[in-house]
Image 1 (cartoon, rainbow, N blue to C red):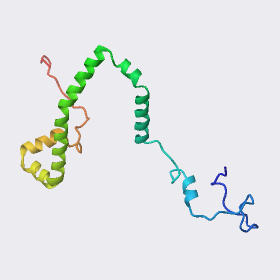
Image 2 (image 1 turned 180 degrees about the horizontal axis):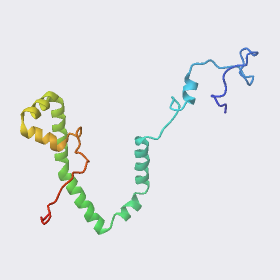
Image 3 (image 1 turned 90 degrees about the vertical axis):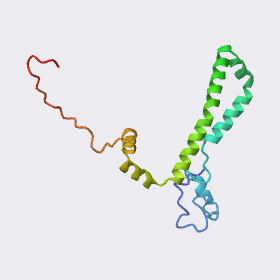
Image 4 (image 1 turned 30 degrees about the horizontal axis):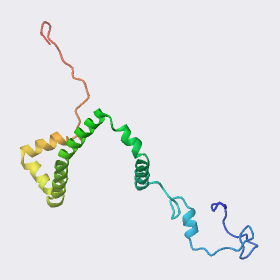
Length: 151
């Protein structure tokens, strides 16, 4: 295989032939794109490929997997996990839909106005997104304790 990074083209004295004496193919750019990293010919392992391999492995080893998961304590744990997940999914979906509706239909100026005019809105913003532009001073204060006083 020829390393395409070192082959620069035909020698100056040879017309119509490559460095190795074979006639040159027309340059359409596809071969060069395929040889470059990240080009058209490169192939990367992505999440779809990993999922496909995982599913094939589960199908091939389903007998062993079923045997390993047949313990009573594991079946109990699986039942509890699935029931909690089943109860939580409607709330998760509702939260995602509500967040999307707020993001689409409520303009950012509403929140800016609300936090300026409402003490509760300003308090919520202060609690959930504190203002770190003026962090508390790290200087130590000098405190004088009177003799005989309790700290």
